[in-house]
Image (cartoon, rainbow, N blue to C red; front, side):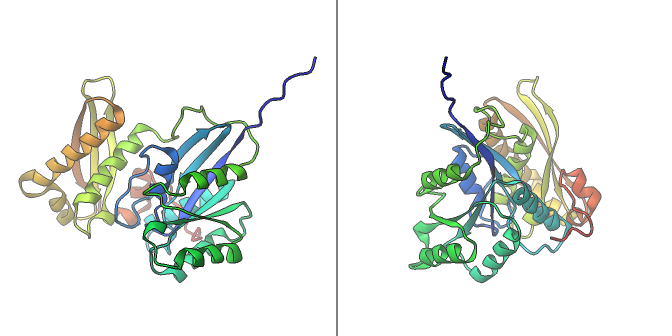
Length: 307
């Protein structure tokens, strides 16, 4: 008896890489259809790889939203750079996201070529923000992608959704034949603690003045799902006492406002009531100390790993 042919599925890892503020996190959220990566107007918002999974019509892509490509100036930024490099090493497809409305194009192109060097996997150039790009810029990026990095150019706007479906189709065509790695209903490999900490950090980034965001980190210390409301204790870490004063605010007004806005986001994520117990602590120079970075969940590269 002749057996029916089984449909060949495709699956693989897809690294989203590019300069800070190119729109990688917005693009991940658009591709997945859920708000997984936090998005703010401040550069270097993404500090660790964020995984998003999309399964659709015989294809599964495990997306890695990576920190922006930059020349690191401290240990945290070296950790961020190493995270992006690891994602590129593990990926079956590279999607390089560029800001068609941005500046410092020459510098961004140098970072891209350096990151992709000696990595021979299919490449796609996602030319983002085409709805606000100056005339001719999209064509310049298109020509450069084909000539300099042998990449398939896909113009799009992650914010409006223009071209996102075309990008998905282009990615699927380049995924290797493979069984699925995860259940089709899974959206991420990260746990809830990770997303809760990110939502608190996003809220703080939105509210606080310019000099604080880069010295701010968040960690969930307790997560009691067996209570109603769910009890979550989260700490906002800063580097100096003066920063703590700004986060707390006069008579605690700022921290109360941050807590209220964060709680709304977390309740939307969990679909249940939440008691958010928010604290602010000083962790001096945490961005430059290996022990502090490890305590906050960052993978710290070796001293000689300056790639």
